[in-house]
Image (cartoon, rainbow, N blue to C red):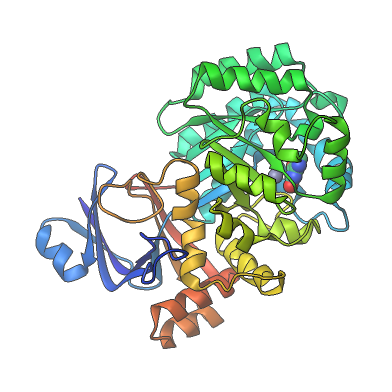
Amino acid sequence: MVILRGLIVHTPKNPFREAGALQAFSDGGLAFREGRILALGSFAEVRAQFPNASVQDCREGILLPGLVDTHVHYPQTRVIGAMGYSLLDWLQKRTLPLEAQLSDNKLARELAREFVKLLLRNGTTTALVFGSHFQGATANLFGAAEDVGLRIIAGQVCSDRLLLPALHTTPERSYAEQKMLIQRFHGRGKLRYAVTPRFSLSASEGLLEVCQTLLQEHPDLHFTTHLNENLEEIRTVAGLFPWSEHYLQTYDRFGLVGERSVFAHNVHPTEAELLRLAETRAAVAHCPSSNAFIGSGLFPMRRHLLHGVRFGLGSDVGGGTGFSLLKEGLMAYLTQRHAPDGVNLTPAHLLYLATQAGAEILGLGEEVGSLVPGKAADVVWIKPEPGSTLEVHFRHLDSVEDLLGSLFTLHGEAKVQKVWLDGREAPLD
Ligand SMILES: O=c1[nH]c(=O)c2nc[nH]c2[nH]1
Ligand SMILES: [Zn+2]
């Protein structure tokens, strides 16, 4: 039994719907045993409840729920920072050649270890991950996550046209390879499988049918892909599926739009698509730094809210600018300031988006995302770098909301000191 003592902040309620969604304990205690949170409250109360527990003093800095990344690409860590491209040429010139190298299993294993370590070092404890086009490399990702105890939902990416030939599969081969991965990894510990066509631009109808078959055969699988990211991409998809009324329909026709589906981006949706996403309870991974970096556009957050379409935050590494979900929170804030009819986000919204909102769209809202007793003890302790502006703010700000605002704004000066996964301290070095 352990009690973490410090400033504890989380958003057990949805600030888009309810006032007072942010809950904070300035000298708080969080007790956990065997991976589960047992109590959250003032340190004095929690200590009185569990007088024999060992106490970890985390009073410098802040304790938050583990962060949840709803869209990140495992093979793309080394692509981050490729400037001057828009989506389709960024893929062709910078990203796909690198992804093709993952046919080398030794490199794939190195990248997988590097990737899970970087997620943890950025405070991410749960992620929906785009795997590799290669079966072996995707198995390496699952293995690396399992080794450190990271909670991931991931899948072998599939495409059978218009990428690099080295990345193309066939419907038959994809079915066989994915089936093996599902049998080996789905439901093993904290690992889950997501059927992952790259986007319908690179997927034939035959391949989308395979995705449909896998979901029919295993109804508890997840589904993820890209949607409405870039105008040229959208035009190309319309040409490839002349029968479709809109991009979403290219997935919907094959039964791929539902409560367990997460669509990355959705920067340029039509009304019909938003209505359909809401009706099916399908969700969106909003990736603000990627949208800015690749120049895809400004996310219409208010339209998603008005339609009741659920969304969380995604780093979208390597189109995004790094693994930090604190930075994605700031980018969401900044881009909404500039979006037509943008939403005025508060620090509580940003924390909610980086934690509980993501957990919910991954179907894990009862398991992670906040520090409510009964949930898994996935916790992050963040400290300001010594001598930094953020440290000055931590010393002088009285309001928790202001402190959280500066944490998101000065995220670059925040150091993830420790991470607990299911109550166990994760290795960060
Ligand atoms: O941001 C993105 N990253 C990708 O790797 C990708 N592939 C298709 N569409 C994509 N969008
Ligand atoms: Zn992506």
